Figure 1 (cartoon, rainbow, N blue to C red):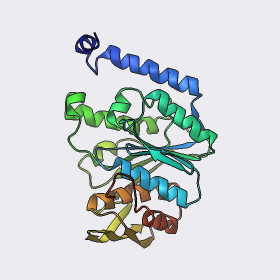
Figure 2 (figure 1 turned 180 degrees about the horizontal axis):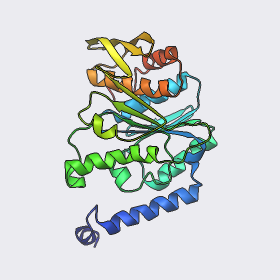
Figure 3 (figure 1 turned 45 degrees about the vertical axis):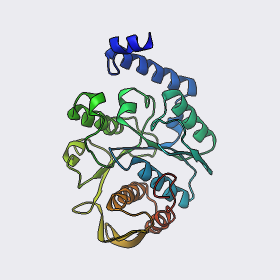
Length: 276
């Protein structure tokens, strides 16, 4: 019967998407829209989301903030971290809203959420008032679900639209963080925000220079407006330099001191499931 229903109503059938929307609404209502009480950072893109989420959380922890986090590989509520065994990158609406409610109850100021295109399309993030949206990169993925690549990119951009048009929380600006080196930078740059910052290896607000890549990690100079600082990253690969740049840009937008970002990235040497 289940197979027959899936054949009649494929994943992106309007009725199935409407069903997901109803679940998202109910989950947010039952849990009392907990995201309204925190500063919420959403990280989307094709690759690097989990690492970037962990980098951001580590930096904010180093800055002394209580942080909640959801990613493909792990969860965090304040000092407690545990492995994500659900096999879902972005949780179903009931579990996600419940996690957010627990974060709020634990006194977390920030919630950092890994956001997939499936989660956006299936309303799993309904009722979450995001304050910061981050894009890591865009590449060919999940075309079979979205129908074509353009649909995939457009779905990713809905997180930026959600931030751009979202209701402001008292004293919290709406912020967009973009990869200036990505092919689809201009597409995501169309959205407006109170604060918009870019990162990359080329012309960007925050950029890396003198990148030295070694098997055990990378060294580079992090340039910010009117300042620069050396960064030691104990995770190899240029893609992790980009992930670190994305996280650093988010935290700079949140007014975290540059020296704290340096220390937080240095201490991000062991992320579960990533080059252990």
